[in-house]
Length: 409
Ligand SMILES: NC(=O)C1=CN([C@@H]2O[C@H](COP(=O)(O)OP(=O)(O)OC[C@H]3O[C@@H](n4cnc5c(N)ncnc54)[C@H](O)[C@@H]3O)[C@@H](O)[C@H]2O)C=CC1
Ligand SMILES: O=C(O)C(=O)COP(=O)(O)O
Image (cartoon, rainbow, N blue to C red; front, top):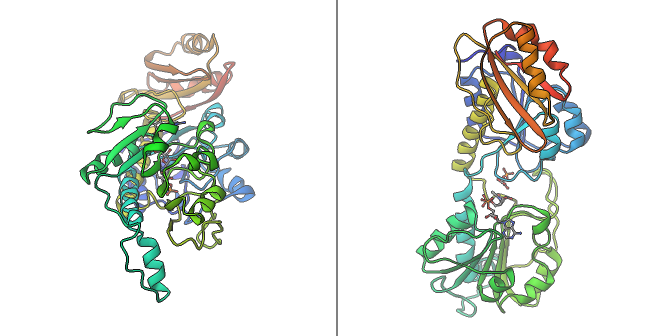
Protein backbone atom coordinates (compact mmCIF):
# COMPACT_ATOMS: atom_id res chain seq x y z
CA UNK A 1 0.00 0.00 0.00
CA UNK A 2 1.52 3.34 -1.05
CA UNK A 3 2.01 6.21 1.39
CA UNK A 4 0.86 9.79 1.00
CA UNK A 5 2.26 12.82 2.80
CA UNK A 6 -1.14 13.46 4.39
CA UNK A 7 -2.06 10.50 6.59
CA UNK A 8 -4.61 8.45 4.62
CA UNK A 9 -6.97 8.36 7.57
CA UNK A 10 -7.24 12.16 7.28
CA UNK A 11 -8.18 12.07 3.59
CA UNK A 12 -11.97 12.41 3.60
CA UNK A 13 -14.29 10.77 1.06
CA UNK A 14 -18.01 11.51 0.83
CA UNK A 15 -19.99 9.12 -1.38
CA UNK A 16 -23.57 10.17 -2.21
CA UNK A 17 -26.57 8.64 -4.01
CA UNK A 18 -26.18 5.06 -2.78
CA UNK A 19 -22.92 4.33 -4.58
CA UNK A 20 -22.26 0.58 -4.56
CA UNK A 21 -20.25 -0.75 -1.56
CA UNK A 22 -17.62 -2.07 -3.99
CA UNK A 23 -16.27 1.51 -4.02
CA UNK A 24 -15.81 1.50 -0.23
CA UNK A 25 -14.01 -1.87 -0.49
CA UNK A 26 -11.55 -0.53 -3.07
CA UNK A 27 -10.86 2.56 -0.97
CA UNK A 28 -10.40 0.50 2.20
CA UNK A 29 -8.01 -1.90 0.46
CA UNK A 30 -5.91 1.12 -0.55
CA UNK A 31 -5.88 2.43 3.04
CA UNK A 32 -8.60 5.07 2.72
CA UNK A 33 -10.95 4.42 5.61
CA UNK A 34 -12.34 7.91 6.21
CA UNK A 35 -15.33 7.32 3.94
CA UNK A 36 -18.87 8.50 4.59
CA UNK A 37 -21.71 7.16 2.45
CA UNK A 38 -25.19 8.62 2.07
CA UNK A 39 -28.13 6.99 0.25
CA UNK A 40 -29.41 10.14 -1.50
CA UNK A 41 -28.18 13.24 -3.31
CA UNK A 42 -27.46 16.50 -1.48
CA UNK A 43 -28.33 19.92 -2.79
CA UNK A 44 -28.21 23.63 -2.01
CA UNK A 45 -26.73 24.84 1.26
CA UNK A 46 -26.48 21.32 2.67
CA UNK A 47 -24.31 20.22 -0.25
CA UNK A 48 -22.09 23.29 0.11
CA UNK A 49 -21.68 22.70 3.83
CA UNK A 50 -20.88 19.01 3.43
CA UNK A 51 -18.46 19.39 0.55
CA UNK A 52 -16.45 22.11 2.36
CA UNK A 53 -14.15 19.74 4.21
CA UNK A 54 -13.96 16.68 1.96
CA UNK A 55 -11.04 15.82 -0.33
CA UNK A 56 -12.99 13.51 -2.64
CA UNK A 57 -16.69 13.39 -3.46
CA UNK A 58 -18.52 10.59 -5.24
CA UNK A 59 -21.82 11.33 -6.97
CA UNK A 60 -24.20 9.88 -9.56
CA UNK A 61 -26.54 11.73 -11.94
CA UNK A 62 -28.60 13.65 -9.37
CA UNK A 63 -26.05 15.79 -7.53
CA UNK A 64 -25.49 19.13 -9.25
CA UNK A 65 -21.90 20.28 -8.84
CA UNK A 66 -22.07 23.91 -9.98
CA UNK A 67 -19.39 26.62 -9.97
CA UNK A 68 -20.91 27.87 -6.71
CA UNK A 69 -20.56 24.44 -5.13
CA UNK A 70 -16.91 24.20 -6.25
CA UNK A 71 -16.33 27.63 -4.70
CA UNK A 72 -17.41 26.14 -1.36
CA UNK A 73 -15.30 22.98 -1.82
CA UNK A 74 -12.10 24.36 -0.37
CA UNK A 75 -10.27 21.06 0.09
CA UNK A 76 -11.69 19.14 -2.85
CA UNK A 77 -9.09 17.30 -4.93
CA UNK A 78 -11.25 15.18 -7.24
CA UNK A 79 -14.81 14.18 -8.12
CA UNK A 80 -15.83 10.63 -8.93
CA UNK A 81 -18.94 10.51 -11.14
CA UNK A 82 -20.09 6.94 -10.54
CA UNK A 83 -22.00 6.94 -13.85
CA UNK A 84 -21.48 7.80 -17.54
CA UNK A 85 -22.97 11.29 -17.90
CA UNK A 86 -21.05 14.27 -16.48
CA UNK A 87 -23.54 16.99 -17.49
CA UNK A 88 -24.45 17.46 -13.80
CA UNK A 89 -20.91 18.77 -13.16
CA UNK A 90 -19.53 22.16 -14.22
CA UNK A 91 -16.38 20.57 -15.63
CA UNK A 92 -14.75 23.86 -16.49
CA UNK A 93 -15.30 25.33 -13.02
CA UNK A 94 -13.81 22.14 -11.56
CA UNK A 95 -10.74 22.37 -13.79
CA UNK A 96 -10.17 26.03 -12.97
CA UNK A 97 -10.22 25.09 -9.28
CA UNK A 98 -7.72 22.30 -9.95
CA UNK A 99 -10.29 19.56 -9.30
CA UNK A 100 -10.00 16.49 -11.53
CA UNK A 101 -13.19 14.64 -12.51
CA UNK A 102 -13.38 10.92 -13.31
CA UNK A 103 -16.34 8.82 -14.51
CA UNK A 104 -17.17 5.28 -15.64
CA UNK A 105 -17.69 5.62 -19.38
CA UNK A 106 -18.58 1.97 -20.13
CA UNK A 107 -19.69 0.14 -16.99
CA UNK A 108 -23.45 0.51 -17.49
CA UNK A 109 -23.55 0.52 -21.29
CA UNK A 110 -24.87 -3.04 -21.52
CA UNK A 111 -27.56 -2.40 -18.90
CA UNK A 112 -29.01 0.49 -20.90
CA UNK A 113 -28.83 -1.40 -24.19
CA UNK A 114 -30.66 -4.42 -22.71
CA UNK A 115 -33.38 -2.25 -21.15
CA UNK A 116 -34.04 -0.47 -24.44
CA UNK A 117 -34.23 -3.69 -26.38
CA UNK A 118 -36.63 -5.20 -23.86
CA UNK A 119 -38.81 -2.11 -24.02
CA UNK A 120 -38.82 -2.18 -27.82
CA UNK A 121 -40.09 -5.78 -27.80
CA UNK A 122 -42.78 -5.06 -25.19
CA UNK A 123 -43.98 -1.86 -26.88
CA UNK A 124 -44.22 -3.45 -30.33
CA UNK A 125 -46.59 -5.99 -28.77
CA UNK A 126 -48.57 -3.37 -26.83
CA UNK A 127 -47.75 -5.22 -23.62
CA UNK A 128 -47.68 -2.23 -21.25
CA UNK A 129 -51.28 -1.42 -22.22
CA UNK A 130 -52.48 -5.05 -22.12
CA UNK A 131 -50.83 -5.46 -18.73
CA UNK A 132 -52.42 -2.27 -17.37
CA UNK A 133 -55.85 -3.27 -18.64
CA UNK A 134 -55.55 -6.76 -17.09
CA UNK A 135 -54.59 -5.20 -13.75
CA UNK A 136 -57.86 -3.28 -13.90
CA UNK A 137 -59.80 -6.49 -14.63
CA UNK A 138 -59.95 -6.09 -18.42
CA UNK A 139 -58.97 -8.61 -21.13
CA UNK A 140 -57.37 -7.20 -24.28
CA UNK A 141 -56.82 -10.38 -26.33
CA UNK A 142 -56.14 -9.01 -29.79
CA UNK A 143 -53.40 -8.98 -32.43
CA UNK A 144 -54.25 -5.46 -33.53
CA UNK A 145 -51.18 -3.21 -33.40
CA UNK A 146 -49.09 -6.11 -32.14
CA UNK A 147 -45.88 -6.75 -34.06
CA UNK A 148 -42.69 -8.82 -34.08
CA UNK A 149 -39.35 -7.00 -33.91
CA UNK A 150 -38.05 -9.05 -36.84
CA UNK A 151 -37.75 -6.90 -39.93
CA UNK A 152 -38.61 -3.64 -38.13
CA UNK A 153 -36.33 -0.61 -38.44
CA UNK A 154 -34.65 0.64 -35.30
CA UNK A 155 -33.40 4.24 -35.57
CA UNK A 156 -30.60 5.00 -33.11
CA UNK A 157 -29.75 8.65 -32.46
CA UNK A 158 -26.20 8.80 -31.09
CA UNK A 159 -24.05 5.85 -32.13
CA UNK A 160 -21.64 5.88 -29.19
CA UNK A 161 -21.02 3.15 -26.62
CA UNK A 162 -24.69 2.49 -25.89
CA UNK A 163 -26.08 3.12 -29.38
CA UNK A 164 -23.56 0.82 -31.07
CA UNK A 165 -23.98 -1.98 -28.52
CA UNK A 166 -27.75 -1.77 -28.93
CA UNK A 167 -27.27 -1.95 -32.69
CA UNK A 168 -25.55 -5.35 -32.43
CA UNK A 169 -28.20 -6.76 -30.07
CA UNK A 170 -31.04 -5.51 -32.28
CA UNK A 171 -29.55 -7.05 -35.41
CA UNK A 172 -29.38 -10.39 -33.61
CA UNK A 173 -33.20 -10.17 -33.42
CA UNK A 174 -33.42 -9.54 -37.15
CA UNK A 175 -34.04 -5.80 -36.94
CA UNK A 176 -32.76 -3.32 -39.51
CA UNK A 177 -30.67 -0.64 -37.86
CA UNK A 178 -30.18 2.91 -39.07
CA UNK A 179 -28.38 5.51 -37.02
CA UNK A 180 -27.72 9.22 -36.96
CA UNK A 181 -24.65 10.75 -35.33
CA UNK A 182 -22.87 14.09 -35.73
CA UNK A 183 -19.64 12.12 -36.20
CA UNK A 184 -19.10 9.66 -39.04
CA UNK A 185 -19.04 6.26 -37.34
CA UNK A 186 -18.00 2.84 -38.52
CA UNK A 187 -21.26 0.87 -38.59
CA UNK A 188 -21.32 -2.46 -36.77
CA UNK A 189 -22.95 -5.40 -38.56
CA UNK A 190 -25.31 -4.20 -41.27
CA UNK A 191 -26.26 -0.95 -39.58
CA UNK A 192 -26.43 2.06 -41.85
CA UNK A 193 -25.59 5.67 -40.99
CA UNK A 194 -28.05 8.22 -42.35
CA UNK A 195 -27.16 11.84 -43.09
CA UNK A 196 -29.77 13.63 -40.97
CA UNK A 197 -32.15 13.25 -38.07
CA UNK A 198 -35.04 13.90 -40.48
CA UNK A 199 -34.05 10.90 -42.57
CA UNK A 200 -33.88 8.68 -39.50
CA UNK A 201 -37.26 9.82 -38.19
CA UNK A 202 -38.94 9.13 -41.53
CA UNK A 203 -37.62 5.54 -41.78
CA UNK A 204 -37.77 4.16 -38.25
CA UNK A 205 -40.45 2.05 -36.60
CA UNK A 206 -38.70 2.69 -33.28
CA UNK A 207 -36.60 5.75 -32.52
CA UNK A 208 -34.23 5.51 -29.55
CA UNK A 209 -32.05 8.31 -28.21
CA UNK A 210 -28.49 7.84 -26.95
CA UNK A 211 -26.94 11.29 -27.05
CA UNK A 212 -25.34 13.21 -24.16
CA UNK A 213 -26.94 16.33 -22.70
CA UNK A 214 -25.49 19.16 -24.80
CA UNK A 215 -26.79 22.47 -26.18
CA UNK A 216 -27.13 20.66 -29.54
CA UNK A 217 -29.29 17.88 -28.08
CA UNK A 218 -31.58 20.08 -26.00
CA UNK A 219 -35.21 19.48 -27.02
CA UNK A 220 -33.92 17.57 -30.04
CA UNK A 221 -37.28 15.78 -30.22
CA UNK A 222 -40.32 18.08 -30.06
CA UNK A 223 -43.64 18.45 -31.88
CA UNK A 224 -41.96 18.98 -35.28
CA UNK A 225 -39.80 15.86 -35.03
CA UNK A 226 -42.64 13.72 -33.69
CA UNK A 227 -44.74 14.80 -36.69
CA UNK A 228 -41.94 13.53 -38.96
CA UNK A 229 -42.05 10.05 -37.39
CA UNK A 230 -44.01 7.21 -39.01
CA UNK A 231 -47.66 6.73 -38.01
CA UNK A 232 -47.75 4.26 -35.12
CA UNK A 233 -44.01 4.50 -34.39
CA UNK A 234 -42.44 4.16 -30.95
CA UNK A 235 -40.11 6.55 -29.10
CA UNK A 236 -37.59 5.51 -26.45
CA UNK A 237 -35.51 7.91 -24.37
CA UNK A 238 -32.94 6.63 -21.88
CA UNK A 239 -30.43 9.41 -22.49
CA UNK A 240 -31.20 12.69 -20.74
CA UNK A 241 -34.50 14.35 -19.85
CA UNK A 242 -33.73 17.52 -21.77
CA UNK A 243 -33.60 15.68 -25.11
CA UNK A 244 -37.38 15.12 -25.49
CA UNK A 245 -40.23 17.60 -24.99
CA UNK A 246 -42.77 15.76 -22.88
CA UNK A 247 -46.01 17.70 -23.68
CA UNK A 248 -45.98 17.01 -27.46
CA UNK A 249 -45.03 13.41 -26.74
CA UNK A 250 -48.05 13.00 -24.45
CA UNK A 251 -50.26 14.54 -27.16
CA UNK A 252 -48.86 12.17 -29.78
CA UNK A 253 -49.61 9.15 -27.60
CA UNK A 254 -53.15 10.35 -26.89
CA UNK A 255 -53.84 10.94 -30.59
CA UNK A 256 -52.27 7.52 -31.44
CA UNK A 257 -49.77 9.17 -33.78
CA UNK A 258 -47.27 7.19 -31.71
CA UNK A 259 -48.31 3.75 -30.45
CA UNK A 260 -46.03 3.78 -27.45
CA UNK A 261 -43.03 5.21 -25.67
CA UNK A 262 -40.55 4.28 -22.99
CA UNK A 263 -39.10 7.14 -21.01
CA UNK A 264 -36.42 6.70 -18.33
CA UNK A 265 -35.23 10.29 -17.96
CA UNK A 266 -37.26 13.47 -17.49
CA UNK A 267 -36.75 17.24 -17.66
CA UNK A 268 -37.41 17.33 -13.92
CA UNK A 269 -36.75 14.20 -11.88
CA UNK A 270 -37.58 13.66 -8.20
CA UNK A 271 -34.54 14.32 -6.03
CA UNK A 272 -35.15 11.21 -3.95
CA UNK A 273 -37.40 8.15 -3.84
CA UNK A 274 -39.59 10.00 -1.33
CA UNK A 275 -40.61 12.80 -3.73
CA UNK A 276 -43.65 12.50 -5.97
CA UNK A 277 -43.00 11.93 -9.67
CA UNK A 278 -45.04 14.31 -11.79
CA UNK A 279 -45.42 14.04 -15.55
CA UNK A 280 -48.06 14.52 -18.26
CA UNK A 281 -47.19 10.95 -19.28
CA UNK A 282 -48.68 9.46 -16.11
CA UNK A 283 -51.77 7.37 -16.79
CA UNK A 284 -50.99 6.69 -20.45
CA UNK A 285 -51.14 2.91 -20.63
CA UNK A 286 -48.76 2.25 -23.50
CA UNK A 287 -45.99 4.39 -22.06
CA UNK A 288 -43.36 2.66 -19.95
CA UNK A 289 -42.19 5.07 -17.26
CA UNK A 290 -39.03 4.15 -15.39
CA UNK A 291 -37.28 6.18 -12.67
CA UNK A 292 -33.91 6.79 -14.37
CA UNK A 293 -32.76 3.20 -13.91
CA UNK A 294 -31.19 2.59 -17.33
CA UNK A 295 -27.84 1.91 -15.69
CA UNK A 296 -29.20 0.58 -12.40
CA UNK A 297 -28.34 -3.11 -12.39
CA UNK A 298 -26.35 -4.91 -9.71
CA UNK A 299 -23.68 -5.79 -12.27
CA UNK A 300 -23.28 -2.25 -13.58
CA UNK A 301 -23.32 -0.62 -10.15
CA UNK A 302 -20.73 -3.03 -8.73
CA UNK A 303 -18.44 -2.46 -11.74
CA UNK A 304 -18.89 1.31 -11.59
CA UNK A 305 -18.00 1.26 -7.88
CA UNK A 306 -14.74 -0.55 -8.64
CA UNK A 307 -13.83 1.46 -11.72
CA UNK A 308 -14.32 4.95 -10.35
CA UNK A 309 -12.92 4.19 -6.88
CA UNK A 310 -9.78 2.78 -8.54
CA UNK A 311 -9.38 5.99 -10.54
CA UNK A 312 -9.69 8.07 -7.36
CA UNK A 313 -7.15 5.87 -5.59
CA UNK A 314 -4.67 6.17 -8.47
CA UNK A 315 -5.01 9.94 -8.43
CA UNK A 316 -4.69 10.16 -4.67
CA UNK A 317 -1.80 7.66 -4.46
CA UNK A 318 0.39 8.86 -7.33
CA UNK A 319 -1.23 11.78 -9.14
CA UNK A 320 -2.38 9.82 -12.21
CA UNK A 321 -5.12 11.61 -14.14
CA UNK A 322 -5.41 9.16 -17.05
CA UNK A 323 -9.09 9.02 -18.25
CA UNK A 324 -10.04 12.21 -16.40
CA UNK A 325 -12.84 13.97 -18.29
CA UNK A 326 -11.69 17.54 -17.52
CA UNK A 327 -7.98 17.44 -16.82
CA UNK A 328 -4.69 17.04 -18.71
CA UNK A 329 -3.81 13.32 -18.59
CA UNK A 330 -0.59 12.55 -16.72
CA UNK A 331 0.87 9.29 -15.39
CA UNK A 332 4.37 9.15 -13.99
CA UNK A 333 5.71 5.73 -12.90
CA UNK A 334 6.48 5.35 -9.19
CA UNK A 335 10.04 6.31 -8.27
CA UNK A 336 10.89 4.58 -4.98
CA UNK A 337 12.81 6.78 -2.60
CA UNK A 338 11.77 10.03 -4.28
CA UNK A 339 9.41 12.80 -3.26
CA UNK A 340 6.50 13.66 -5.53
CA UNK A 341 4.94 17.11 -5.98
CA UNK A 342 1.80 17.90 -7.99
CA UNK A 343 1.48 21.38 -9.45
CA UNK A 344 -1.69 22.58 -11.18
CA UNK A 345 -1.47 25.96 -12.85
CA UNK A 346 -2.99 28.26 -15.43
CA UNK A 347 -1.64 27.47 -18.88
CA UNK A 348 0.26 30.74 -19.37
CA UNK A 349 3.87 31.27 -20.49
CA UNK A 350 6.59 31.28 -17.84
CA UNK A 351 5.09 28.95 -15.20
CA UNK A 352 7.31 25.95 -15.95
CA UNK A 353 10.42 28.07 -16.11
CA UNK A 354 9.53 29.64 -12.74
CA UNK A 355 8.93 26.16 -11.23
CA UNK A 356 12.25 24.85 -12.49
CA UNK A 357 14.03 27.94 -11.21
CA UNK A 358 12.69 27.21 -7.72
CA UNK A 359 14.34 23.76 -7.85
CA UNK A 360 17.62 24.98 -9.31
CA UNK A 361 17.95 27.83 -6.80
CA UNK A 362 17.27 25.42 -3.94
CA UNK A 363 19.87 22.98 -5.38
CA UNK A 364 17.31 20.18 -5.48
CA UNK A 365 17.67 17.55 -8.15
CA UNK A 366 14.59 16.82 -10.27
CA UNK A 367 14.46 13.07 -10.96
CA UNK A 368 11.49 13.08 -13.33
CA UNK A 369 8.88 15.49 -14.59
CA UNK A 370 5.71 14.96 -16.64
CA UNK A 371 3.75 17.96 -17.89
CA UNK A 372 0.50 18.03 -19.84
CA UNK A 373 -1.57 21.06 -20.65
CA UNK A 374 -4.91 21.84 -22.20
CA UNK A 375 -6.11 25.24 -23.34
CA UNK A 376 -6.72 26.45 -19.77
CA UNK A 377 -4.72 24.39 -17.32
CA UNK A 378 -1.30 22.78 -16.96
CA UNK A 379 -0.64 19.82 -14.69
CA UNK A 380 2.90 18.75 -13.86
CA UNK A 381 4.04 15.86 -11.67
CA UNK A 382 7.59 16.30 -10.37
CA UNK A 383 9.75 13.70 -8.62
CA UNK A 384 12.68 15.10 -6.62
CA UNK A 385 15.45 13.72 -4.47
CA UNK A 386 14.18 12.51 -1.10
CA UNK A 387 13.41 15.34 1.29
CA UNK A 388 13.38 17.96 -1.47
CA UNK A 389 9.68 18.53 -1.90
CA UNK A 390 8.82 20.00 1.49
CA UNK A 391 11.66 22.52 1.20
CA UNK A 392 10.24 24.20 -1.89
CA UNK A 393 6.48 23.84 -1.36
CA UNK A 394 5.90 27.41 -0.21
CA UNK A 395 7.94 28.83 -3.10
CA UNK A 396 6.01 26.71 -5.59
CA UNK A 397 2.74 27.99 -4.14
CA UNK A 398 3.98 31.53 -4.82
CA UNK A 399 4.71 30.92 -8.52
CA UNK A 400 2.38 33.26 -10.47
CA UNK A 401 -0.39 31.25 -12.19
CA UNK A 402 -0.43 28.49 -9.55
CA UNK A 403 -3.92 27.04 -8.95
CA UNK A 404 -2.86 24.53 -6.35
CA UNK A 405 0.20 22.52 -5.45
CA UNK A 406 0.83 19.82 -2.90
CA UNK A 407 3.39 17.27 -1.85
CA UNK A 408 1.96 13.83 -2.58
CA UNK A 409 4.66 11.76 -0.85
N1 LIG B 1 -30.67 6.27 -18.39
C1 LIG B 1 -29.54 6.01 -17.79
O1 LIG B 1 -29.50 5.53 -16.68
C2 LIG B 1 -28.27 6.27 -18.51
C3 LIG B 1 -28.17 7.32 -19.41
N2 LIG B 1 -27.00 7.56 -20.06
C4 LIG B 1 -26.95 8.67 -21.01
O2 LIG B 1 -26.68 8.14 -22.31
C5 LIG B 1 -25.78 9.01 -22.95
C6 LIG B 1 -25.03 8.27 -24.03
O3 LIG B 1 -24.14 7.36 -23.44
P1 LIG B 1 -22.93 6.72 -24.28
O4 LIG B 1 -23.44 5.96 -25.43
O5 LIG B 1 -22.06 6.03 -23.32
O6 LIG B 1 -22.20 8.05 -24.79
P2 LIG B 1 -21.16 8.20 -25.96
O7 LIG B 1 -20.44 9.48 -25.69
O8 LIG B 1 -20.36 6.96 -26.13
O9 LIG B 1 -22.07 8.38 -27.26
C7 LIG B 1 -22.82 9.51 -27.54
C8 LIG B 1 -22.93 9.66 -29.06
O10 LIG B 1 -23.81 10.75 -29.36
C9 LIG B 1 -23.26 11.46 -30.46
N3 LIG B 1 -23.81 12.82 -30.48
C10 LIG B 1 -23.46 13.89 -29.72
N4 LIG B 1 -24.20 14.96 -30.05
C11 LIG B 1 -25.05 14.56 -31.03
C12 LIG B 1 -26.06 15.22 -31.77
N5 LIG B 1 -26.36 16.49 -31.56
N6 LIG B 1 -26.72 14.50 -32.71
C13 LIG B 1 -26.43 13.19 -32.93
N7 LIG B 1 -25.47 12.52 -32.25
C14 LIG B 1 -24.80 13.20 -31.31
C15 LIG B 1 -21.76 11.39 -30.22
O11 LIG B 1 -21.03 11.67 -31.39
C16 LIG B 1 -21.59 9.97 -29.73
O12 LIG B 1 -21.36 9.05 -30.78
C17 LIG B 1 -24.91 9.55 -21.81
O13 LIG B 1 -24.31 10.78 -22.14
C18 LIG B 1 -25.88 9.68 -20.68
O14 LIG B 1 -26.43 10.97 -20.67
C19 LIG B 1 -25.91 6.76 -19.86
C20 LIG B 1 -25.97 5.71 -18.99
C21 LIG B 1 -27.11 5.41 -18.21
O1 LIG C 1 -24.60 6.81 -16.20
C1 LIG C 1 -25.39 7.75 -16.44
O2 LIG C 1 -25.13 8.73 -17.15
C2 LIG C 1 -26.74 7.69 -15.88
O3 LIG C 1 -27.62 8.39 -16.30
C3 LIG C 1 -26.98 6.79 -14.75
O4 LIG C 1 -27.20 7.63 -13.67
P1 LIG C 1 -27.36 7.05 -12.19
O5 LIG C 1 -25.98 6.63 -11.74
O6 LIG C 1 -28.27 5.88 -12.27
O7 LIG C 1 -27.88 8.20 -11.41
